Length: 140
Image (cartoon, rainbow, N blue to C red; front, side, top):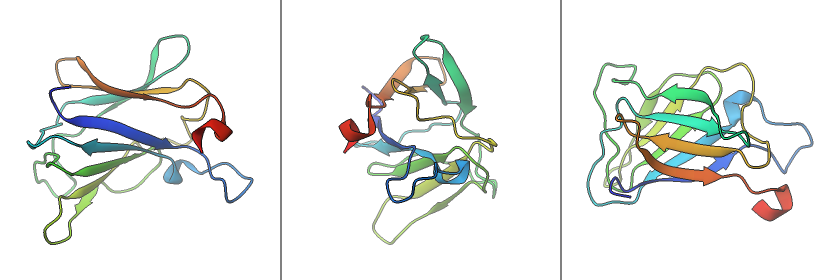
């Protein structure tokens, strides 16, 4: 994994309430564990289902909402939400930026056993993936 970016997990259900999450609360976590910043403009994330077909492709934007170009710094965190919101970033002094990106989908897309988040670079090469556990009890 030359990029250093990993798919660290998927928040796709809520153990605190019986109702499923809204799309605005469902997200995929990406982290740059490498020692170099990574430009993820033009990269994509898909949900590979059990049929081995990539569904729900999300293409990372070229710029943030304010027009700034961006990259994921070492230690940087990215939360890619299923629902609606405004793309942006926050940073604390001495820490890497945390990005929040939104797919603007009306319904949740994660949660089926075997769903796999697949991260591709701009050439289409698979960079990282994360498969949901088969059951909620396996995820704890």
